[in-house]
Length: 361
Image (cartoon, rainbow, N blue to C red):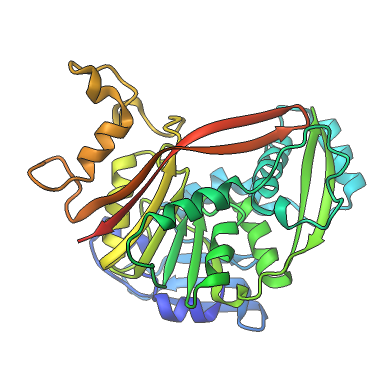
């Protein structure tokens, strides 16, 4: 955790904020290991004497959740798994544990996200052996297409919601001055992003087939990574005061949170007046989103209202619409934009995502 990000953003205790509607500042309670301005291991603590809840910093990643114990219990494996094993040991564990094991599910997501986020940054010939000649970089293309929808260039600070292994955060920092924060629930993916932040180097398993992965490791060249940090937080229960950010990005998490509409409210609250946000979604509703919270994809008396695009436009049209998210307006959209995710040597998932940009009025 970068000390500069902590001091600038001034995070507050999510438990006090949600359960007692009190904004209690977090403070650095313990530093066990530090590298330059980054706390690698330590603790944050709520400053309110009625709470004093502690939030650990592990591998440079602060874990700041209202339901801290639940998050740690559910992610215990990802938090404690070793990331320094040689590739031969990783291959053996992958083979012994089998396709349904948490270890291979973790490696699967590392493969999918790291390929799309950083495959375009690999040295020439790094992936020449691949049977399926997919092209990485769909994330960056969608992100840039969304930013182009905005009439005014966004400013920092910027929050990258659902940042995964961090490419959008680094991409934004490369071309724009100011602070950038990436947040995600997946600790294993955040650990990869944190290593890039500290070392400018990525290492990940690329799935060949079944439980066979090839390890790839190479240097990157993100010059302004000093402006970037990554925290483990819930996008629906963020530990910040209102109006803490000027720009928000949320690539493909709208259909993956428990209450999609609440994500828009959370973004609205985060943004300063005049701030903007870019989102992309394929409306591929998956757990933990209950069916009653889907935006579209269900039968209605009016078939036109069953389309997610039309319902989203209503939610982001505050004029004369009591169901809209107040003070958040749609300013541009691309109804279909390709997004390809490499799964393994013979499989690519191709989406047509809806990209939309909105502004806080």
